[in-house]
Image (cartoon, rainbow, N blue to C red; front, side):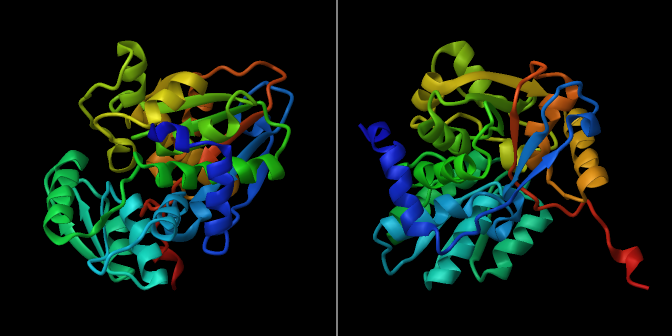
Length: 318
């Protein structure tokens, strides 16, 4: 069973394979009072938006390209944007051809990154599922290696390396909040952390695949929309992700688009960190009250993506 391959040993092995190709992204502590919270401990932010290509995704991309055989046809990926940029970056660094399929909802910032890394870009359909279908057809026809955004063992073990890093950088946290789309990040973290911390998933109310799966007792299709659709808009949580989440994720909370925007504004105002909507979703759970920490809780929040054009520097040039 493939889920059995997604464990601490595999994650440690993935880290050995990819560590020279990725950044060990920093953590920063921020006073809870700066966020309007009455808890005694500072909040740790893992700034994974400082990773290559602007999100955590290169971890899984490099794991796929280094731990699997890449054919002469190169690699292919379907993506809302961040995964495509990561696969394009990893392929560029390792000398492989890449073909990336994105839906019309992909943001201009992410499309620009994919093109900058030299990948062939195909815009296919209005949703991630449409891009995935086109990608699968391309893989069947051309023999390219399909690098799934969240539902392959290599992707999950690559994303799980964030947990390995965190336990050396901020060993005292006891709760971690994670934005969820298809679930590759929370699945990988679950496989690494297991029961050593409370894992809280955060989804937009308009794109809630893991929340719906927990309610139904199995992965189910959901309608997706909203401000974070290009990164958290998976229609169904991954089949490899779900058993890991079921075993180790304590809860999934939902946030509104307005909460996400407030979290983006707060990160910029207090830290000068420019997060994209999906990257700020986990913090939105705390500042909105969707997740209510205990007074002595030691929180870690993943800020997992920064591919946004929300900050305009045009007025600073003259």
